Length: 97
Image (cartoon, rainbow, N blue to C red; front, side):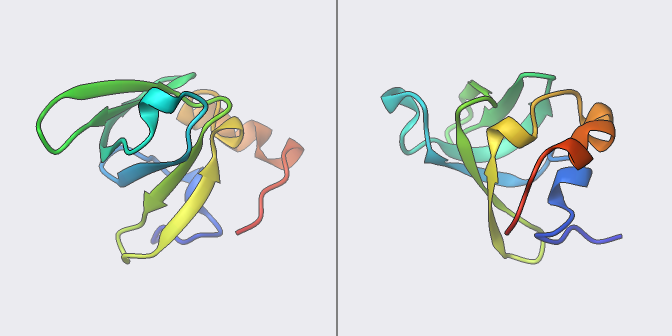
């Protein structure tokens, strides 16, 4: 099933391009790159220069570029938790594109 704005929360985020939309910390402003790992509470982003940044999901908003080229704003509070556990909790949270 292809990733769409409506089902992005149900998919693995590793490999997708991400940039910070509303960073909780000023030092994260302008951060962008490829998601290379995801834990329960963080997203690991590899910047174009090769450096790695570990970003807390909670209190941040991510602009994720889907394989189709469409950008989707994803509130980090909705993706807190391990990717396979998000499916269990997704019904408890509200999300609209």
